[in-house]
Image (cartoon, rainbow, N blue to C red; front, side):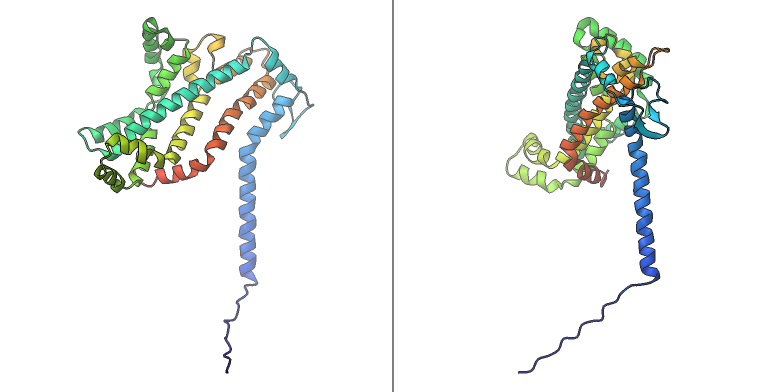
Length: 305
């Protein structure tokens, strides 16, 4: 019995300039990543340091440019939670209520519109798509006067949707639900093969059954993306609630926190920073709940237009 010796190819080891160049590129990339992380986290660290600082002014609340508080105290949080003039939890609930309801309505309207534009061919389809995009070109400040007068008239009939009401703010937000979100979701619908719809139709399913039972479970990533964008946009918005809301109990968090900055001689940046830090928790929670769907939804929604 003879044994055959197998010959192996010689292993090539890279040394010298090749290894040095690879290490230098890795070091440069790490430095860039660290710099970007510092750039992104620095404002957040400044807010944390200011909220725990005992100093009243913004410049004196940190140790130079280092985001460390001068003295450590919970006085700002105690003032925020105990003062009758600052119903922080009421403002937070108002923001969550407005953002949550408007996000749900936005998802319903945007999903139905995007499905119609993607799957059906009808007269005015292209014009409708262009109109939803062109409307977004004009900033919301242009329509503020018309919005104010509109809610004033609506409030005479239905007070819940009038001025100084959360329902009126929700009505305005849902009125601008289409636009870029419809285009983003339509791009995701276009990535789903039309053969799925045709197969369901052959089996006797209607358009609505196909949409709710087959298509809707497939678009969960883009629903998460549009939902988080709509929630953050309405939660952080300041201009529309500032114009439409007046009573302290109906203010949203973004508007309510500015009451600490209105007084020219007693601007309390510490309490403002504490309230801003509390306001980040709802957005963080939403991100943690939807993080598995966000990346795939953004990537897939940009494949087709």
